Amino acid sequence: MAKQRGFLKVEGKIDDISFFKRKDEYLLRQKGGVSKHRIMTDPKFKRTRENGVEFGMVASAGKLLRDSCGVLINKAKEGTMNIRLMQTMTGIKALDVNSVRGQRQVYHGLNTVAGKELLKGFEFNGQVSLPQALMAPYALTKASGKIVITDLIPAEQVVAPPHATHVSFRAAFLNLNFHTGERAITYSPVVNLALSAAIGNVTLTPTGVPAGTGTVLYLLLMEFYQEMNGIQYALSNGQFNALTVIDVA
Image (cartoon, rainbow, N blue to C red; front, top):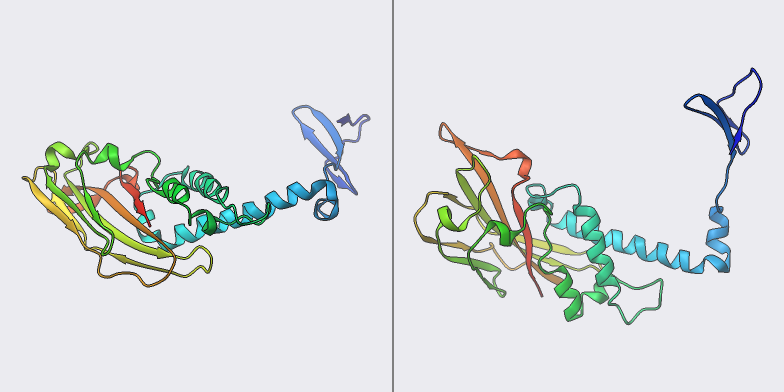
């Protein structure tokens, strides 16, 4: 990096040379790096091109999942969600043994047991996991998407944030085709309980079986509220809520 000398100091760009100020010095540098044309044509950058294609496909798969269950994600997410989802989708893509390098697909990876296991248990809110928030077993009926939490004692088995007075549960049943982009989702009614409630069962039954021939995901949302003057208010933009992919089929 070169320095400008003389009484006339310049900032800006002339051709491929940039003039700029850093602290008390005026500097200049020439545009560097590899041109896009070379990356796209030079055989030496074949691996770079392959990685770029697969990165784009992984990003599209993550966006498709986020868009498909955005109603729930908006209630339970934080700043690392996109990065963590990209990492998960990248791992699933790597399980595609049918495609050549540069064309590996998430949907092929999800056709494997290992691929489904990578997505199972994904937490959309990286700060709160379902096992941390819910200290009670639950049962899933895959044919209907129904989730039942048996003999739940909210005051003892729900780890609630300060000032929370109520917790709600909601299930989602998602059929998502990562190849075609087709998607369908159904939701259960919300079950809302006071954290002081007595022992009871929570039954979450989606309104129907979503159509499609893609990957089936089962999701469970826990959402916290504070009641004031008979009205329940959501806590802190959902930062304490948990949303989890509890199973993948």
